[in-house]
Length: 321
Ligand code: DON
Image (tube, rainbow, N blue to C red):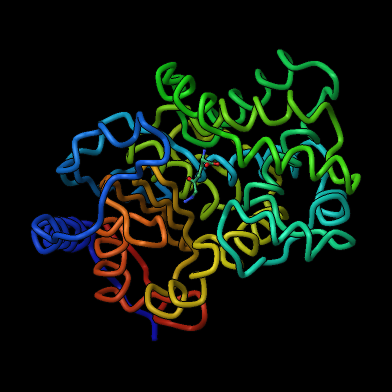
């Protein structure tokens, strides 16, 4: 069914979602990275960005938090921009692993077979593919510039978070070298891991993530800067990656209940994409057992369920002024 909704009704719905979810309890900050354990756990924000650049926000939408695994989407976009869809599929893949984000088992099981840039192994592999290969500084600049392009404004490295992650990323070190063992890393493993750790430590706001989500929803056109960030033909590839594994081993449950592809991060952020519709982001640090923000999930689901939107065939909405 085609539905028309005014921007003011959408604004009221976002405010209502905020009010309904703000006192939800449950979950705890990520504690395997010491920095994240100390972020105030009562922060909560929702931001929705429309293709005309209009932002609808409630709560702490300009609080800067760690982007963490949501950065995997950004760097997958960069690899697609630099090397194209075929190269990404051949060198990394687009399959869900069905296992947690940092699984070593997934690499052992799929050693002859690619996985996805949206789990740790594939994300470290994606950093290794970023051009120019062999030049850490230039690769980092490309990663940062691409994040700015998608979010419409610069992100800032959170040095304390970067230090905290670097001091504790033993599992990821194993992943980087296991990838080397199976010829699935395409630059120096330590350098690729450092790029991954740094990109996870970038500070972002819910507002910036909503803009990035809307850039993907708008087939590569950043709604705020009006820059065509990536060729429109790549948009379905990016959405397919997110829909397959945005919530790792819980992606099916998420898609079934929310109806839209979204990517989580242990910093408490979630970035969702309704292709042709809008980008949405929510942020709240306490995570459930699977490592996903409790309130951000509730908030996004509240909005998508009330709108009836669903990429598998829900209502299509036209947003009017
Ligand atoms: O690799 C890690 O452990 C973190 N830097 C990122 C993890 C993350 O956000 C997982 N996703 N929900």
